[in-house]
Amino acid sequence: MSETRFADTAAELSNGLKSAMRRMPGAVALITTRDPATDQPAGLAASAVIPVSMEPPSMLVAINRASSAHSAIERAQRYCVNLLGTTHTAFVSLFSNSAMREQRFASDEWRYQDGIPYLPSACSSIFCEIRTTLVHGTHELFIGDVYDVRSAGGDGEPADPLGWLEGTFAQLGRLPI
Image 1 (cartoon, rainbow, N blue to C red):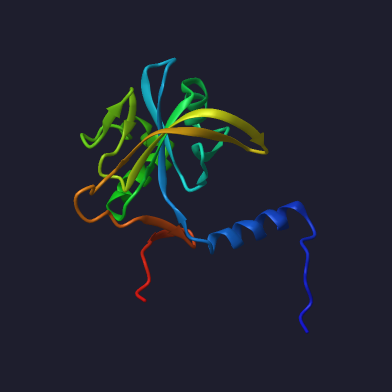
Image 2 (cartoon, rainbow, N blue to C red):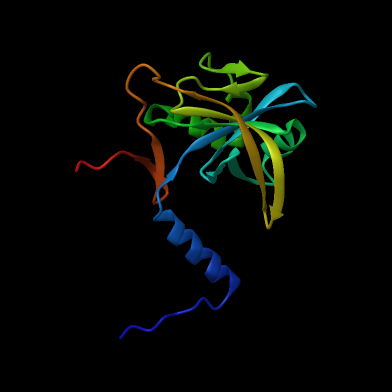
Protein backbone atom coordinates (compact mmCIF):
# COMPACT_ATOMS: atom_id res chain seq x y z
CA MET A 1 0.00 0.00 0.00
CA SER A 2 1.42 3.39 -0.97
CA GLU A 3 1.47 6.23 1.47
CA THR A 4 0.03 9.66 0.61
CA ARG A 5 2.64 12.39 1.01
CA PHE A 6 1.69 15.95 1.73
CA ALA A 7 3.85 18.97 0.92
CA ASP A 8 5.82 20.29 3.87
CA THR A 9 6.20 23.89 2.72
CA ALA A 10 4.38 26.42 0.58
CA ALA A 11 7.22 26.18 -1.97
CA GLU A 12 6.80 22.41 -2.23
CA LEU A 13 3.06 22.82 -2.64
CA SER A 14 3.56 25.46 -5.34
CA ASN A 15 6.07 23.27 -7.21
CA GLY A 16 3.76 20.28 -6.92
CA LEU A 17 0.86 22.25 -8.35
CA LYS A 18 3.00 23.51 -11.24
CA SER A 19 4.11 19.96 -11.98
CA ALA A 20 0.54 18.65 -11.87
CA MET A 21 -0.82 21.43 -14.11
CA ARG A 22 1.93 20.90 -16.71
CA ARG A 23 0.30 17.51 -17.35
CA MET A 24 -3.05 19.08 -18.14
CA PRO A 25 -3.27 20.34 -21.72
CA GLY A 26 -4.52 23.88 -22.10
CA ALA A 27 -5.39 26.26 -24.88
CA VAL A 28 -2.93 29.00 -25.79
CA ALA A 29 -4.37 32.47 -26.21
CA LEU A 30 -3.32 36.05 -26.73
CA ILE A 31 -5.27 38.45 -24.56
CA THR A 32 -5.40 41.83 -26.28
CA THR A 33 -6.82 45.27 -25.62
CA ARG A 34 -6.20 48.93 -26.37
CA ASP A 35 -4.95 51.03 -23.48
CA PRO A 36 -7.13 54.16 -23.27
CA ALA A 37 -4.34 56.00 -21.41
CA THR A 38 -1.84 55.62 -24.29
CA ASP A 39 -4.14 54.68 -27.20
CA GLN A 40 -1.71 51.80 -27.86
CA PRO A 41 -2.52 48.10 -28.25
CA ALA A 42 -1.43 45.86 -25.38
CA GLY A 43 -1.48 42.14 -24.80
CA LEU A 44 0.03 38.99 -23.36
CA ALA A 45 0.15 35.26 -23.96
CA ALA A 46 -2.01 33.22 -21.57
CA SER A 47 -3.27 29.75 -20.97
CA ALA A 48 -5.51 30.60 -17.98
CA VAL A 49 -8.71 31.26 -19.94
CA ILE A 50 -12.03 29.51 -19.46
CA PRO A 51 -15.66 30.02 -20.35
CA VAL A 52 -17.64 30.78 -17.21
CA SER A 53 -21.25 30.67 -18.34
CA MET A 54 -23.36 30.48 -21.48
CA GLU A 55 -26.15 32.52 -19.84
CA PRO A 56 -24.83 35.16 -20.01
CA PRO A 57 -21.98 34.14 -22.32
CA SER A 58 -18.82 35.01 -20.40
CA MET A 59 -15.09 34.29 -20.28
CA LEU A 60 -12.55 34.43 -17.45
CA VAL A 61 -8.90 35.37 -17.92
CA ALA A 62 -6.34 35.24 -15.11
CA ILE A 63 -3.72 37.97 -15.54
CA ASN A 64 -0.57 38.39 -13.47
CA ARG A 65 -0.81 41.82 -11.85
CA ALA A 66 2.90 42.43 -12.61
CA SER A 67 2.40 42.03 -16.37
CA SER A 68 2.54 45.14 -18.52
CA ALA A 69 -0.87 44.38 -20.02
CA HIS A 70 -2.66 44.10 -16.67
CA SER A 71 -3.10 47.86 -16.19
CA ALA A 72 -4.17 48.33 -19.81
CA ILE A 73 -6.89 45.68 -19.46
CA GLU A 74 -8.01 47.18 -16.17
CA ARG A 75 -8.27 50.67 -17.72
CA ALA A 76 -9.91 49.53 -20.97
CA GLN A 77 -12.48 47.30 -19.24
CA ARG A 78 -12.52 45.22 -22.44
CA TYR A 79 -10.35 42.48 -23.88
CA CYS A 80 -10.20 39.94 -26.67
CA VAL A 81 -9.28 36.28 -26.14
CA ASN A 82 -7.55 35.16 -29.35
CA LEU A 83 -7.50 31.34 -29.23
CA LEU A 84 -4.44 30.42 -31.27
CA GLY A 85 -3.84 27.74 -33.88
CA THR A 86 -0.70 25.74 -34.58
CA THR A 87 0.45 28.36 -37.12
CA HIS A 88 0.68 31.07 -34.41
CA THR A 89 3.68 29.92 -32.33
CA ALA A 90 5.75 32.96 -33.39
CA PHE A 91 3.12 35.25 -31.84
CA VAL A 92 3.47 33.43 -28.52
CA SER A 93 7.20 34.15 -28.52
CA LEU A 94 6.56 37.85 -29.17
CA PHE A 95 3.93 38.13 -26.46
CA SER A 96 5.94 36.17 -23.90
CA ASN A 97 9.09 38.30 -24.16
CA SER A 98 8.85 41.82 -22.69
CA ALA A 99 11.89 42.90 -24.74
CA MET A 100 9.78 42.36 -27.89
CA ARG A 101 6.82 44.43 -26.68
CA GLU A 102 7.19 46.99 -29.50
CA GLN A 103 6.99 44.23 -32.16
CA ARG A 104 3.86 42.48 -30.87
CA PHE A 105 1.39 44.29 -33.11
CA ALA A 106 3.75 45.06 -36.02
CA SER A 107 2.38 42.25 -38.21
CA ASP A 108 -0.17 43.19 -40.86
CA GLU A 109 -2.25 40.20 -39.69
CA TRP A 110 -3.87 42.26 -36.92
CA ARG A 111 -7.31 43.78 -37.38
CA TYR A 112 -9.26 46.02 -35.00
CA GLN A 113 -12.81 45.90 -33.74
CA ASP A 114 -13.96 48.72 -31.49
CA GLY A 115 -10.27 49.62 -31.18
CA ILE A 116 -9.30 46.19 -29.81
CA PRO A 117 -6.72 44.21 -31.83
CA TYR A 118 -7.59 40.66 -32.86
CA LEU A 119 -6.17 38.00 -35.17
CA PRO A 120 -8.68 36.99 -37.87
CA SER A 121 -6.61 33.84 -38.45
CA ALA A 122 -6.97 32.72 -34.80
CA CYS A 123 -9.21 29.71 -34.20
CA SER A 124 -11.58 32.17 -32.50
CA SER A 125 -11.48 35.72 -31.22
CA ILE A 126 -13.80 36.34 -28.28
CA PHE A 127 -14.54 39.96 -27.36
CA CYS A 128 -15.46 40.65 -23.73
CA GLU A 129 -16.48 43.56 -21.54
CA ILE A 130 -15.40 43.21 -17.91
CA ARG A 131 -18.22 42.60 -15.43
CA THR A 132 -16.43 41.15 -12.39
CA THR A 133 -12.88 41.10 -11.05
CA LEU A 134 -11.23 39.25 -8.20
CA VAL A 135 -7.67 39.68 -6.96
CA HIS A 136 -6.11 36.47 -5.69
CA GLY A 137 -2.41 36.21 -4.92
CA THR A 138 -0.29 37.37 -7.85
CA HIS A 139 -3.20 37.43 -10.32
CA GLU A 140 -6.41 39.25 -11.03
CA LEU A 141 -9.32 37.35 -12.50
CA PHE A 142 -11.29 39.29 -15.09
CA ILE A 143 -14.71 37.88 -15.96
CA GLY A 144 -16.07 39.48 -19.07
CA ASP A 145 -19.43 39.27 -20.77
CA VAL A 146 -18.94 38.17 -24.37
CA TYR A 147 -20.23 40.71 -26.86
CA ASP A 148 -18.83 39.24 -30.10
CA VAL A 149 -17.17 36.05 -31.36
CA ARG A 150 -15.27 35.69 -34.62
CA SER A 151 -14.03 32.32 -35.84
CA ALA A 152 -11.52 31.54 -38.59
CA GLY A 153 -12.52 29.12 -41.30
CA GLY A 154 -16.21 29.96 -41.08
CA ASP A 155 -16.77 28.47 -44.52
CA GLY A 156 -13.93 25.92 -44.48
CA GLU A 157 -11.95 23.72 -42.14
CA PRO A 158 -11.28 25.18 -38.71
CA ALA A 159 -7.68 25.86 -37.69
CA ASP A 160 -5.79 23.26 -35.64
CA PRO A 161 -5.89 24.49 -32.02
CA LEU A 162 -2.57 25.25 -30.34
CA GLY A 163 -2.10 23.74 -26.92
CA TRP A 164 0.38 23.83 -24.07
CA LEU A 165 1.47 20.59 -22.43
CA GLU A 166 4.51 19.68 -20.33
CA GLY A 167 6.02 23.14 -20.85
CA THR A 168 5.91 23.14 -24.65
CA PHE A 169 3.52 23.55 -27.57
CA ALA A 170 1.14 20.76 -28.43
CA GLN A 171 -1.34 20.19 -31.21
CA LEU A 172 -4.79 19.59 -29.80
CA GLY A 173 -7.22 17.53 -31.81
CA ARG A 174 -9.91 14.92 -31.77
CA LEU A 175 -9.11 11.28 -31.23
CA PRO A 176 -10.23 8.92 -33.98
CA ILE A 177 -13.08 6.74 -32.77
